[in-house]
Length: 233
Image (cartoon, rainbow, N blue to C red; front, top):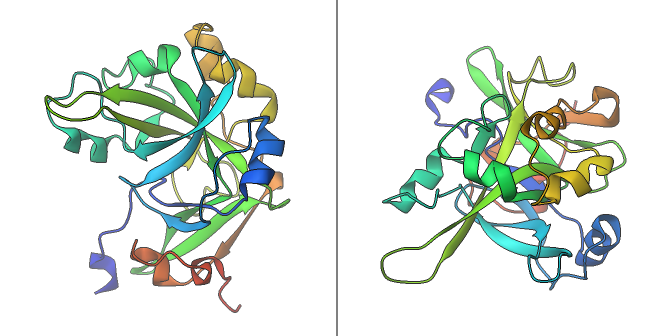
């Protein structure tokens, strides 16, 4: 029964198909190591993010595990509940408030999926920039040290109210940052919560496009270009 399918929560899947050279040029970061295009990124997987390196104070590209594990967590499984953070409450929520203060990042993407309820079925939609350029979600990152083993660096993607394009599709949308906001968002020394929260607004509808795609994306094991192909109208 289609209506019984357990589908990803708000902003639970996205795409990152831009090349390292394009990312380096667009986000003013040293050319990152080669990584494969991703057509169906799911929680707990490594995702490409940009943050400020504390030693050099410059932008650096890192791979972070998607699903933020707070430093105080007893169990890393909490990360599955922390793949998204609401912009409206991020400054107060215990899981996110420390990261919001000084561990902010840009999560690199070329699009994201939402599931639109159509009758009793859920139709996956792909949403991205009309320019087809990569963009940045507002993200937060955190370090978690297990009792035995290596530190895990993880992150979350912020969400906000939907814009006009997204309203018929979903009641939330990921925060896509304007390029003019990157410096302030990344700067760990900038800690004025009200100013930072003002950056977390719905992205202009007129710069985005949305189209239906195959239900292949429902399964995170499908990570291929077919996930992105528009359904025949």
